[in-house]
Amino acid sequence: MLNTLKAEAQRLKMTVLWSWQGWCATWTSEKSLRQWTMANVASAALALALDLSPSERALIIGFGILILAAELLNTGIEETVNRISPDHHPLAKKAKDAGSAGVAVTAIAAGVVWLIILIG
Image 1 (cartoon, one colour):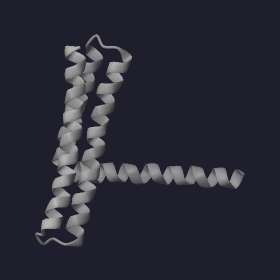
Image 2 (image 1 turned 90 degrees about the vertical axis):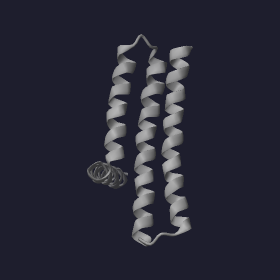
Image 3 (image 1 turned 135 degrees about the horizontal axis):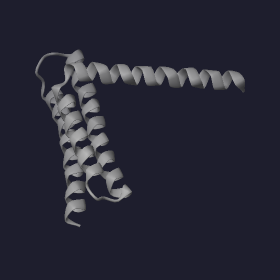
């Protein structure tokens, strides 16, 4: 049992390390992640400054974090496609465009959350 707990703790430590490395690598290379991060800092600050319920704040901040997750996944798709082949190919374009669309849909969802909270 103790060995299992130690192994799981080590795995968690490595997972956190790899995730941090992924964040840092993406932050360094992707302007869009930096832009979305700044937009989310502003959004979270506004959500905390306005007279909103804890649930409303959680929705706003949660959806903002989902945008960042989508951007990280999109970068993973783009990097993988580029690694497989730098040549232009319709399937590569489709994969990259789909990843970009995923970010856009997530951002639209976050915007809808803001609108519903502000209007409602």
